[in-house]
Length: 120
Image 1 (cartoon, rainbow, N blue to C red):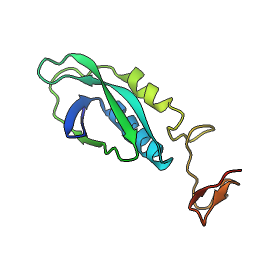
Image 2 (cartoon, helix red, strand yellow; image 1 turned 30 degrees about the vertical axis):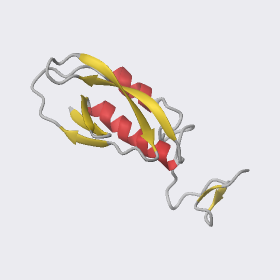
Image 3 (tube, helix red, strand yellow; image 1 turned 45 degrees about the horizontal axis):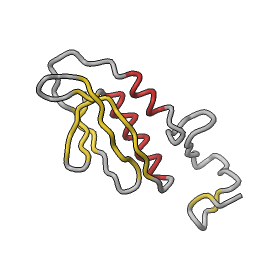
Image 4 (cartoon, rainbow, N blue to C red; image 1 turned 135 degrees about the horizontal axis):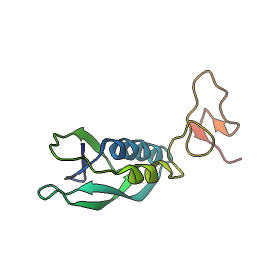
């Protein structure tokens, strides 16, 4: 389980949701955008499952840290998959945000002088 710190508050979620959230936050910020997302969380105190809404991307810091958890871990697989299905989530295959390795050819719209993509 992981504790997500955001805007001075914290929520608890599973490792897979936290990992997907951090990856998506970085990808959205890389595009210079901010977007609203929902993640499944566990409420401290009574352990109920609920949702949190966050704005991720530029200007929105997200910290994921491990937390001790004694209870059963909820199954938030669907929540993690929703984050990974986001159009900006980095993918290794086709579609989505994708970074290339130094040895690879940059995309044709890549302009190194502008350190980014230019309009085609």
